[in-house]
Amino acid sequence: MPRSPLRSFIAATLLFSASFSWAAEVKVEVLQSKLDHPWSLAFLPDNKGMLITLRDGQLRRWQPGEGLSDPIFGVPKVWAHGQGGLLDVVLAPDFENSRRIWLSFAEGNSDDKAGTAVGYGTLSSNMQRLENFKVVFRQTPKLSTGNHFGGRMAFDGKGYLFIALGENNQRSTAQDLDKLQGKLVRLTQDGEVPQDNPFAGKQGVRGEIWSYGHRNPQGLAFNPANGELWLNEHGPRGGDEINVSQPGKNYGWPLATWGINYSGLPIPEAKGEIVAGTEQPVYYWKVSPAVSGMAFYNADKFPQWKGKLFIGALKEKNLIELTLAGDKVTEQKRLLDDHGARIRDVRVGPDGYLYVLTDESDGQLLKISP
Image 1: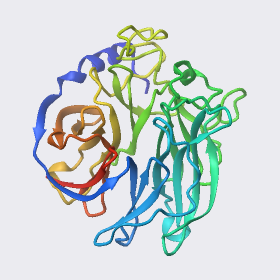
Image 2 (image 1 turned 90 degrees about the horizontal axis):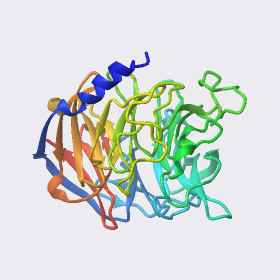
Image 3 (image 1 turned 60 degrees about the vertical axis):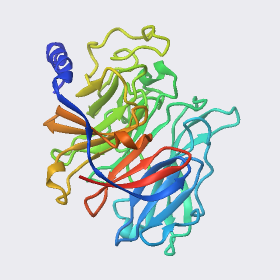
């Protein structure tokens, strides 16, 4: 149910009541270095390693004992400027039969503007090629000059694909329902609009939209405790958020924000931190860590991590560990603080370890345990 203004205010004022500790020790194993700005990873079944995207447009496979493969052929041409390039990679739910790999990436046009595109190809049996790659979704209009692509993807348990999209640093477009900037969209496995999407069939509104009013989502994950879809997103100067997405809801940007402009002045369109008709985050940071990849820990390997939420931090250069009670954050810790690297992605491996990518010119793949 929508939150009342009073409940939203109370929730917002309680956001900082979570206990906080800074440095927590973990065991870190460097599995691979010399990765040029890696962005995402996806685990292959049957101990075949993982796929890793590099922002310049390379898709590679890493496997224990064999290391990093040559670039996989058949990846679409990407617009590798600013924050743009090859972004997320996910396996189709039926990968073992279809061998379908989904990629999100920045795609440019003749005016040197770009937007996020999504498509899929078939991974060859020798894992050296993506065959018959097909683009099934394009963020329109193309407005980015290098900022705020979003690009995280996640499949739910029913075969629907969710894609988180940034507003291309064009603030007001996040509220425009005829545009795909600042939106979370929901598609079928073939890239079609599901008929039960909240705006499907409505005139002047993009039927792909699931929720709107997002700034620049960087993490997207389903909560295994209740099936809710959580996303995190960059605020401006301050105001990084975690939201629980509900169909048809408005998450406020740029009308409602807990941050200010980089100049130190208020966001011009903002009407306050809490605005009627918009949803409040379940958590926010007044000082932005620059949140990135996000994963719920639901493995049995390390019981002390069960139910925790892990989020990469680009600006703080660490890994955030959050303890949850329902949709409330009760405690937060910082991991990898002494590693001093921008954390771009974090995933839970099939072996129960955390796997982390650092977003550097000499980026690393790390294996993490308590």
